[in-house]
Length: 329
Length: 280
Image 1: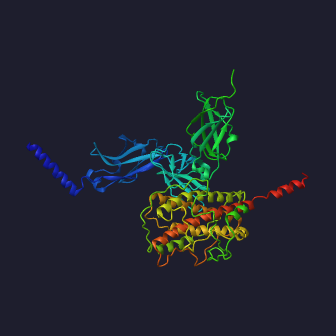
Image 2 (image 1 turned 180 degrees about the horizontal axis):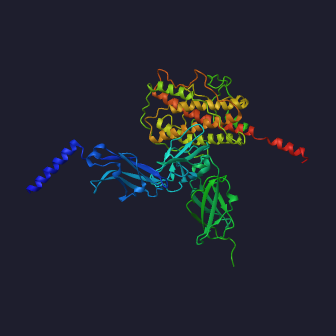
Image 3 (image 1 turned 60 degrees about the vertical axis):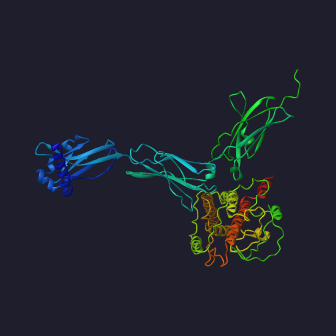
């Protein structure tokens, strides 16, 4: 009990004196550069400079310095003694991503003392982003994606930039977990050309993708037609009339459609020839159907000139053709 | 095209209204009967129900100085640089785009105006509200004598459009909307951006046709300075007329650009003559 108390008192005494004096905890030297980022495959040199006070205290000079990477001593051939107080180490063709480099001195012939330590991070500069493309889902904001290129092993920031000929828009910064696409902050203005590109930047460099220039109206994915309904005809047992409501985008762009149908138990869809559904409409009469048969229909739309993306398929709707009036014998 | 105009513009009684900012020869005629205040043309979807009107809390006064300054700054913004387009197929495609843009803006304005008028509250959001034009004399007038409109040369036609939207954008940006919902503020901001796009588009057409952009004359900056007795109600009236004038301008611009489009297309008669020359 008594020894414990004494030990605590001694420890506290040492702690407080060293805190106020500070000398015993000061490093014996330092390494330059402090926190380098190095390109994989390149050369790197670090310099360790000893403090006079330390050199006197331990009776050492720069010749007593030895280096370690991740606790493995570096061969002497890589050292260069610059002068009495400084020694450097050179690495060629760095291939490790994360190296802990320490500068140490051998004191009194046998005691190894650590002087200073740094961490070398290595990686690659970003590659030029490729295949930049954008899409505007109707009613939503424009989203662009790209191919970021090779792994850099470093934190790389991607920024999507956009501008008109007369005005710049705010940068779109990618979120950390999705570095290959960005949704802009502003609603799209159709019929005005916009120029878009991506900048990639990390500690080793900055690079810009090719610029693309387009009208957002040519990159639209419309909402699918809705309220699809099917009605039959008493007079003609081989037809069914399809009606639907287009989304609001049809008030300023013209649409074309794909209409598909199948009998209830069929597994493959037949498609109405696209030439027949090549312009804005809200109904279509399907002919040459079998009488008294249930058919299922679905519709999708896109911009009439083919620029942009097809909408999702509408909800399916079904109807039954009328009975054949001809009595079958 | 002209026969539709005749239906929409009744024979004007020669009301000598104050000249707008654009040009001295323009004499405004009474509002075309078809374009009733922000009502839907028949056959289209009903005006969407907006949110419940916010508190009638439009504050006047201290922001006017700032607004005048802001408008002056915007008005003096350097002219849009001529757009460099190599391999240009002529002004046709950009005229078509500008036309499409006015239709798109009309579509946007329809829902925006519905919401904003609901925010202003009655009587502004009543469908048969058709007030006399009080105040709002400085707003650029879209309606114009039909013969005058027809006789406008391309440069003047484009210049009037450009100047009108510059003014209207300035006023629109100054709309006091602190009390409006975030949704409404966003819609207004987006509409302002779209109008900015329209200005750029018109500037592009003018550049393609070789016309200089209109420079503002000193002393003609739009200032929305209310008179000393400018009440809340009159302020709302100003807002109402701003939206109405925007609607009319977009309706007119569609016709302006349609006309320009036809002028820049090769006339079919020339093609026929060509065939005749070859003995067909």
